[in-house]
Amino acid sequence: MASLVQHVAGLACPPLSGASRRPGAPMRPSALVCGTYVLSKDEKERERMRTLFDEASERCRTAPMEGITFSPEDLESAVETTDIDTDIGSLIKGTVFMTTSNGAFIDIQSKATAFLPIDEACLLDIDHIEEAGIRPGLVEQFMIIDENPNDETLILSLQSIQQDLAWERCRQLQAEDVVITGKVIGGNKGGVVALVEGLKAFVPFSQVSSKTTAEELLDKELPLKFVEVDEEQGRLVLSNRKAMADSQAQLGIGSVVLGTVESLKPYGAFIDIGGINGLLHVSQISHDRVADISTVLQPGDTLKVMILSHDRERGRVSLSTKKLEPTPGDMIRNPKLVFEKADEMAQIFRQRIAQAEAMARADMLRFQPESGLSLSSEGILGPLSSDTPEDEGQSTDE
Image (cartoon, rainbow, N blue to C red; front, side, top):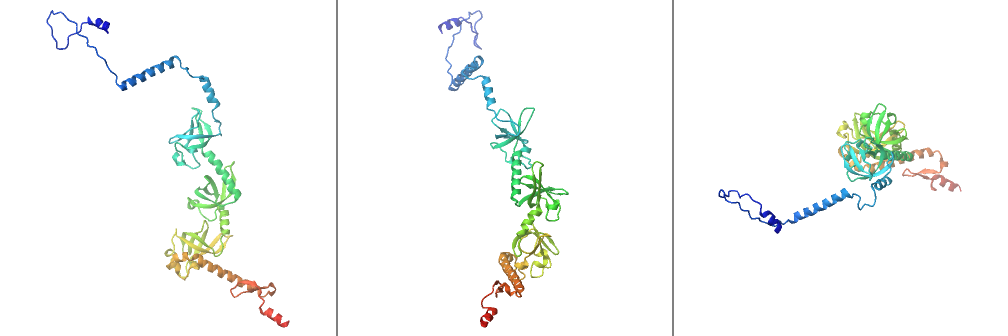
């Protein structure tokens, strides 16, 4: 410090602003003021970080591999040996990390980029990727279906996996010969297109139980059974008639079913009873005369009806609410009571039918005493009792 003072002591300093001296007066050296600048805590930390950065930068420049036990060649080899199978058709597990209007980017734990297009997200046609449940964080198994030659991005698909599962499910349902439900989503002159297990299936008009058009069936659900399941040809054909035949086989005379009024005609109302159209004739609505059907029923009404007859060959079912009335005219005055008592009244009807049938059989057996059967006072057929006149006559003769 002393040498520094001696060095600068002889330097001439200009006078302070506003100071004046006499002309010709000798110039005198100014006094040197020395002090100490103290760094704040934040400034010291910044200074320390700057020093560490400078040292690290210098090491990277002069000795970049210092402390590393493997070479860049070793790193590249490790990545290659641990890379996943990216062949077309391979299944791969990935995590959605970003969605766009066109699809989603998938992290497949590989150096390759993977993308799921929106039209490969599910079996259905969607406008937004989120409609298929695709959101960041979703972990799913995908199928590799292509590779973009421009940037080597892998193109993934969920639709391909879902299609395989759907076809397998259809083959299983066909083998079990079960009735399924399909929603009509379109049609043409030959039939309608229904959505079954996520796949588009064809139902020819020749296999539709009722005479109708594609427009009338649009958005309706039909009971169906499989006719043909051919994944290789992409053919999925179903039948509404076969499903109806199974359902109709379960319809017994006198059984009560729940139905919905489809349409009204001057002669009666057409009722949908689980995919089967039945006719509730105006004469079978009530014991009292019904002048205007619309005063009793309206399209869309839900009601209980009883099966009167069933022509399986012609596909016609006759229905009745008249037989369910506890007292004549209840269907007009109090239809709620009719529906509440429907099962009870139907049971009475079935008993009357059974009794009538038994009496008819008894009439046939009356001329066949060798049958050993007789009719009780309740109208029930049973073994010939020992106290019949015939037995009494035999005992007298003995």
